[in-house]
Amino acid sequence: MKKYLPAATAAAAVVAVLAAAPATLAAPAAAPSSASAASAPGDSSAVAPSPSAPRPSARVVASGERVDAGGGFTVWLTEEGKYWTGPDGYENFRSVVDGNVDPSRPGVSHQSEGSAGAGVFHSGLYYGTKKAGKIVLTGTDGTKTTAVLLELPGRPGWGVWYAHTGPENDGGAAVALYDRKGRLLAGLPGWNA
Image 1 (spheres, rainbow, N blue to C red):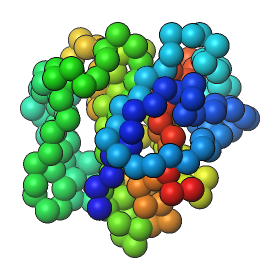
Image 2 (image 1 turned 90 degrees about the vertical axis):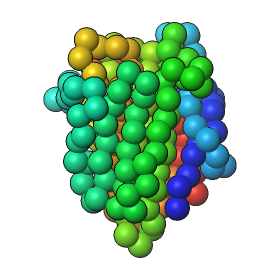
Image 3 (image 1 turned 120 degrees about the horizontal axis):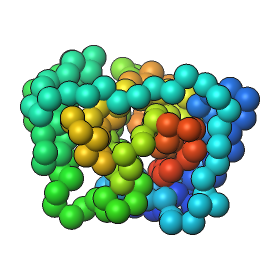
């Protein structure tokens, strides 16, 4: 199953409440599934600090360098965007140059494929910031998963993220993008809650 989430602003879509544990985000309201990209509003009141914690940083990869993302998935970046293949071998692409993402403000996209019985591969773009610190998925059951971040050299202001969730989550995870200081920059709500 492949699912795409509709565009929504982070202020309307994600309620960020950061508690004592690192990468803790309150589960946002459910939303219908469809194509995805969401951006945080320019309002700085949407930014919430998190406690001090190790901050994952993006792994820098060369254009076209294939990264084994586990579970039969491979991810790679070029100046045009994100590519990925799954166990089926079918090549997928998400552009950063076709005008469907707004690089002038932080945002995140989300694609997922897999099944509730076998687990789900999640991936997407993050963009509009050169200070991405981490992406956290919050599953429909409340499980939190920190994604792997990939970027091209020179901090181009966008990158790719990916993560795997277990069979208890069928792709309806909420996605939150944080800066390196732990502040929420953008997010997408989960669905199937």
